Length: 425
Image (cartoon, rainbow, N blue to C red; front, side):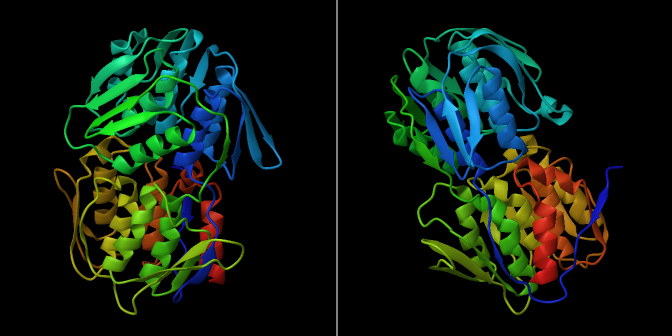
């Protein structure tokens, strides 16, 4: 068995200020746009994690020049060639890089972790086939036979499994001869804010994008090289804010953006609804603002919430709901069955093993408060499952998180940050 990490239990209300590294979602989109730009780019405050390292490695494998100089990432576009791309368990790599590989001169082979080989890929691969790109395979491992600049055009896809399918096509779209128009024709589209983030970043790079309901048209043309300044990762901030919520303490996260496309910003309303005091305040140091959350003196209130736009917050919100005083229902998240693991099944299994009462619904979870006890919390190689276990461990003695190191996917050093917060806060 992978090593177990004893999740520290808080002895009282936590009072803490936390710095959170840059957003994975913004960093990896900036990598793609910089790799396809007309001239060099710089990424400032980029996240350094397994997912972003895999993205850099993938682009280097295709010929892009990437160097880290004094904490800034310098990217110089180069002619793309064939190579081998290691995806690990990074959805942004396995779904954003194939449309880039379509422009390579040569064969590009994709593979990843064993868990990644069961993640849905047909949507993006079939879309590339529709756009005239030769593709072999339907899941990892698969092969893209790059033949220079593809023609592009209109493609209809069912992106109800992941918004990353749309973003991957849009990011590369300006470099296709006719651009790319993506029309979503399936069920409810999840994580729409991530597509809005993609569109916003394309426009900041000088790309013309037309948006109508369930349709996005990226016009062909240049992508401007520029300096990208990455915001703190708000989803990675949520476990620390949850620590205030479940212990009745106060946690401040530095440099919270006032205007953002990150879905993690929705945690503010979630915490308010569950009984926390949430304030945007003048930054403790430097320009900008911080976010400060103070938990209630008693237990949290349960919540009924459609999380279709903010599915990545589900493990954090589920952990809060387990510790609340009244039932919660989290819906609109059937697509989480195709994430790093089947997050709905995993959350239900682990909560119930600790004595909780979590029922898996067709499109979500129903959580009824119940007395909890210690035990092993499995991470399923899923970073957000691991942090959910840490949140519950703040209040429940004896929780041991299996493979907490999986948090390095997006937040290297999480366990040290967490231990410092509990010990010193």
